[in-house]
Amino acid sequence: MVTFTHHSGGTSEHVWHDADWSSRIRPLALADCGRLIVVAAHPDDESLGAGGLIAVAGQLGLGITVILATNGEASHPRSPTLTPADLVAVRRVEMVNAVRALAAAAVVRLLDLPDGDLSQHRNSLEEALAAEVAELTGAETAGATWVVTPWRLDGHPDHAAAGEVAALVAARTGARLLEYPIWAWHWSSPEDPVWPTGHGTGLWSLELDAAARQRKNAAMAAHTSQVQPLSDRPGDEAIVQPGFAAHFERPRELFIGAADEPAHGPHDDASHGSKPTSTPSTTDAAAPQSLSAGFFDDFYAGSRDPWGFETRWYEARKRALTLAALPLPRYSAALELGCSIGVLSRDLADRSDTLLATDINEQALTVARERLIGLPGVRVERRALPGEWPAGTFDLVVLSEIGYYCSPADLAVLLERCRQSLRPNGTLVACHWRHPVGEYPLGGDEVHAALAALPGLERTVQHLERDFVLEVYEHGPAPSVAQREGLVP
Image (cartoon, rainbow, N blue to C red; front, side, top):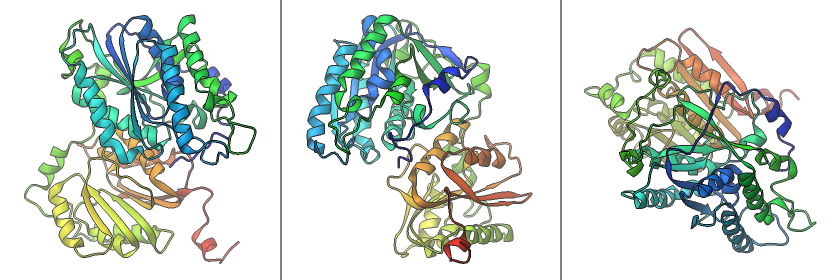
């Protein structure tokens, strides 16, 4: 779900220009790049976010492929001038012309996936991207394959889906992954904690010479349907308005990627799709990693209920407080993340028309399915989060003590996906143990500090004990329970 619009003013480019990010940003050089694959969720993503990179790669004679996931037919949903089918025809031509302006020899792949619904077609994008990377396997190129994609935290669900798929393929093949922000320049600010600070994930800046900037400007101008009004009638306004376009007229482009540049030799195996052989720096080694599925396999081995959900008064009381904190008596669609053996799920099913309960451990899910069998509207699925995120939106999202299993980078993705999946009048409830656990990458208080920084959400309930913290967030400004009941204005 997109929680911003191109009509709002957004953050001025002057704010970004005056921000001192010099300590966070590292220079990006293409010395180790052998082939460049750029993923665009919509036509113009490639030009706005990575047009300079494509132009520089073209100047160096590198092989370049641009994969366009959707045709951008949903850019003007209220246009009285062009239908979605008209926009498909227009924007495909604009995109091809833009890529030609950037690098004449670049190859364009058009996937024709539906605009606004890319998360439902992740498999198609993954197959196309994996095939493109595999096509380069064995190619005699000096350097690695780079996969460049919209940023997973950019605030648009199609960008999130494209970024998550690209991250999955890059991790599997050893390609270098770089992500480019687009809408984050509009809705975010330099102080926003969503931006990486260099621990595990860093910011990389590519300086553009005059020729690259000229090519990028020409490519942006080629997307006429986006940078100019379709007509003077309401619904035909330009999407990329001057204040927004200013973010992409800088003499540099910024990317998000691993904090340390991989060390690839001229014919390093990593350039052909195997695991990178670079040695992690001290910073990378110290950066906590998300717990693996194997951790939970070991934890559940030989025990039906290792946490004591069925037997401990602590757990029963915490569940009662969680259920009492929900501001609505009933929800139409609930998502429970980290359902374990389904004890809380059983109570949530009584408060929801539909419930999707997920966990990473199949043994726990077997118990949960036994407990929930026959309940209408309940689905139980194994999902590794945040990568295997369910499609759709929900008016209740329950974050059941899994945030501290994540690395800081994965937690940022997890929380942003929770925010994007929450319907306008929805409820996000989170509860986490506050005592330190040596194996966990993060503590409960750290998880809730990151949750409090999510844009657009208001904390409406906070219950803090020595043992755990329980919070409820809603899109602000949210009415209180008494206001909903008409007890107060």
